Image (tube, rainbow, N blue to C red; front, side, top):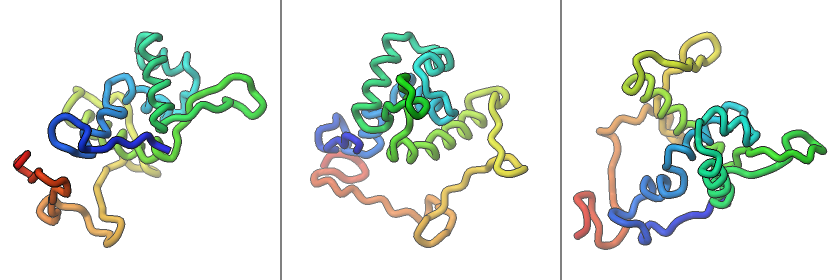
Length: 156
């Protein structure tokens, strides 16, 4: 179970983006999640592939376990060695990582250092509404603040 935040306790606009970033938004946490998604579950693998200082990495891993994004469990059945694995909340973060990867390929690097393919073609991401199946376009979205005292321009 993810340790959810009350949006009213956040600084600035109450928002799920701000709450998400407070839970997992720092650089090392994002890179830890990337490594676990790539199948690297042991501390030594995660440390090597993120480049994070070991003390900082320990803190981030502990935090991600505490908030319910990662869990510790044996690397192999019957093993004494534990690794880090995605919880259901962590699994739901996979599309976020894919979107960051696609954005980074387009805007942050001179050439993509990793290629994702879907069957036999490059993966192209598109956001679709699960309810109706339509491609999501900004013009079709309605934004509404549900927190009293706030609208889209800010605090009333």
